[in-house]
Length: 392
Image (cartoon, rainbow, N blue to C red; front, side):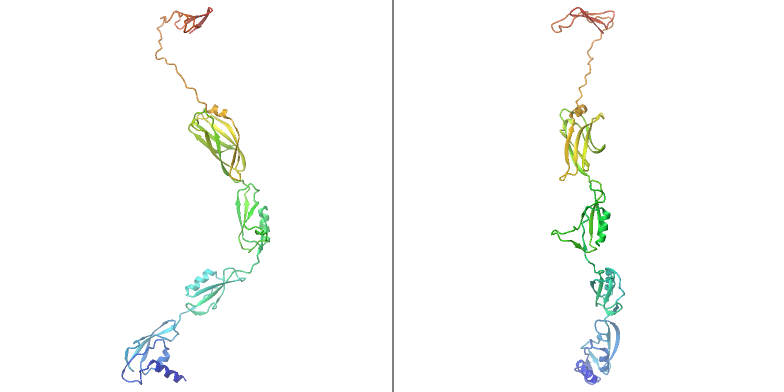
């Protein structure tokens, strides 16, 4: 049977070659055939010399190149054919990746030019680690082989029932969540007038919109929001009405519980009808307004109630404003006058400036005036009714 096969192959390869003779023939194609088969069957026609063996997708021992090439002339019995043989596909060994983190294991396999197919399964082994591979770890496989990599998603878990923890103290809420096997709890805090550490909200309610009990995987994130016990601050704007008739530089300060919470200033209060002060606070507070003038004199003249926690923003209510205090601080000062003495005549000592002055129609109340020559700064005035008035 073997002889028949060999003869058949010989006929296929050398359709035109007959018994070895010292003649020229055309080189047949021997690439793709087994080296042993070609060498054994046609050793009388030419000899073969293996130049090199290298990894190739062809089976090991297969001729992958020849020289002379197919169709070239050669002398029967006197020609040496140089061939390259396949060592077969390159083999790599699947490394030890058991219990290795999945991303790391995949990188190790891909570096060996293997095609990795991750398969996630329930297993008692640590989550996201490799359980096994197919083909098995340690196996020799050719490059490009598909390797199934089985990864654990941890043991099978039952869903947890969501309780209502709103209104509870933080410690009590955590205890109840632990009892319900809700493990991934995240705590957030916000400023609130509620007692410190009181739970204000939870990310997943006890029931859904239809009233059905909510259940979640134990490792799903569950967020609870807890009060700091500190009321949240907000901003409000107080508008002060300025009465007319005031003048001067003015500054204003707002106080809550004796602490400054806002201020404002104007260069001349005469030119404004209102002054706005932005203040910050929490809950409902009384705010007192103090004004100061350019002399540094201050007075508290207004009182407001401010609800910083209004649903639609802060609500400002005027309780009392004493405009008279503002007038006292900023009333215009009367213009100062000084006597003009540039044209006043001061007589020399002993000179009579006037001796008498009789009443006239323009000055009916003036009496007769007489200069005392013994004292240049003394005179007597006789008023109607014989009263005498002395003056210097």
